[in-house]
Length: 145
Length: 144
Image: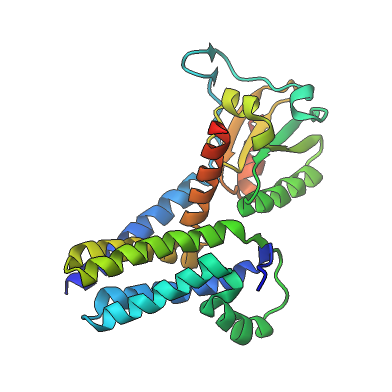
């Protein structure tokens, strides 16, 4: 499956909204429900990062349920930064899951809360923290190149 | 119970960050001295036609610094183009930050998009980072 170079930004916001709800649930649920839900979210992050944004289940949900009811997007967004952002989410979710399973729930909650903040900002005001991080790494790479 | 505390705390943090971002974006501030700490150039930085690639506007020039993979840059471009069309004597140009690193360093550009307002002589009067609202650009032009 090839990833397109650009994506519908509304799909990203939709996916971020679902992610926000899922991570909020992870914060509130008791074990083992929260570990199971977190694992599902981890898989979603992994698909988006390693396979491509179009492989994300949330993105597919958008494509099937929401997109047909909307007009065409006013503009398209480059897919590289949001994909990197999924990777950042993956890292935090992985740390959280390992922490929960290894018996360090406070670390797990902190990592989950951090990912939640990023997802909420994206869903609510369209600010992509991971995207900003992507731009910073590119800048650093150019500085040291 | 602990989880609820973290959730509420996270929502509060997100709200605070959102407010800071909203406040910062498009906020035009007066331009300060250019150059770096080790190589200061007192007085407002002046940009030349060679540096920005277009003729300066009779009234003002809007210079936008952009980078690749920057969707806010695209939105800003649209807003600036619209303003340049509506206001007499305003020139607008988009400068790629990555291919103008000397300019970026000299002007202390930290973020894209960054919009500079130049007066007719090319001196930087005011600047803002993040997507500005149309009214913010118009108000900034009034000070040029």
